[in-house]
Image (cartoon, rainbow, N blue to C red; front, side):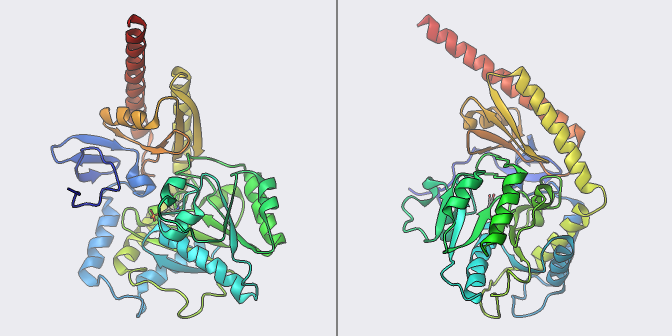
Length: 402
Ligand code: PLP
């Protein structure tokens, strides 16, 4: 019999009742160090007092008004995002995939409004992940996610990530945009060269194409800058964000320059819940903290320390860890046992981490972690490595004895 919750996920048998900062606590009181942060979502950890206060204060006022009416919190958040980024305008959504849908529609509509509706095609990348809607699985590269859901939405041309020559070759008179994650998260914490991202910008300028950055995972401080495009030294025309901006409350946004948004006129797009007052109040509170002077520098510093400590553990366990990757607190280790086994071994040490492509284990703690939590995570990682190694040795001995 099918489970009441549609069984599209395999979940370990853990039920969390509450959270405190970087910790999750089960119903029976077991504490887990949460270096998944809801897959790079809980930027300020669990139950951050400022977020709890913002949400409860708003909950006492008004929950939902729809987009039929103005809402002060949404207008304030949009203005703050505009002030702090390349963008001139913002559309609010409830998730990353919806933010990407808006980005894709906006790029098509831009070309339409420019008198070039034939430029509907977009270049995308191997290893890319943009969400689970039909358009975003068509733009993404994971064949497992599209199997049985065909036909794909036409118009996406996939090339190897980081290969500027392949991008150049793929451009046709019908190409209207390039969609890229400045650092691929689900794909395996794949960091391209900044020259590659600069090259994409140049190609977009040369060929009247829009550059779309998917910063759903990299955004809102995750890489030690407010957005990864600052790290890359490149400005997109359109950018999708979600995850961290809500600190755990479902909210996303599509940011754009005035020029890129020129096709998005009244009635061209919409959402019932996008810009919901509860979401807006929490996102404004997230910005209060993330944009505080020194916050992002601390993320960058903690990220660097964490990466160094991970490099040390790689040196101690070369048969288990092949590589350390990432920027800020979007870090990954490429492991030499199945990454699901490694994730399970960490969980046995009460450390939560999450798998990614290329057999990588992702470490994406809340951005509020400091030396103490990093030290704690290192001890647990070290214990997990030792136990995996001991099990491998025991297995090899059994094999030799047989
Ligand atoms: N884009 C990127 C880069 C992501 O990492 C994700 C989610 O992991 C998405 C889009 C989809 O976001 P959501 O799951 O909120 O729809």
